[in-house]
View 1: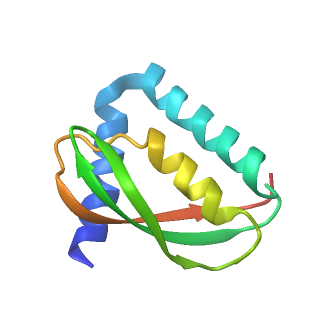
View 2: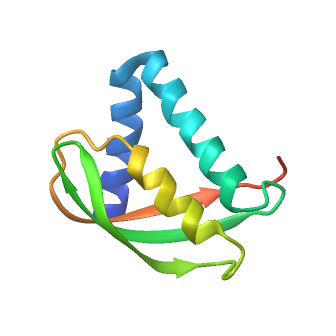
Length: 102
């Protein structure tokens, strides 16, 4: 649970520090990933486990998917490629919540 809280806090801090241009890029990537892989009207939660190093995530695998076979797993893996990680290293759990309604 502590790792999840650290990751969420780290992601929020990374976005704040990176500034609006980078935050816009991440938001654009998230929208693109979701539109390409899943229905934007549906809500879902996906939990990934990844390796963090050099400010990026790699080797991600899906641990949980609240809507299996609906493409949210692929969308989460796609978003993870653009997720800024700052100086965090090691194995991390990354929750991805897709609110739906779009």
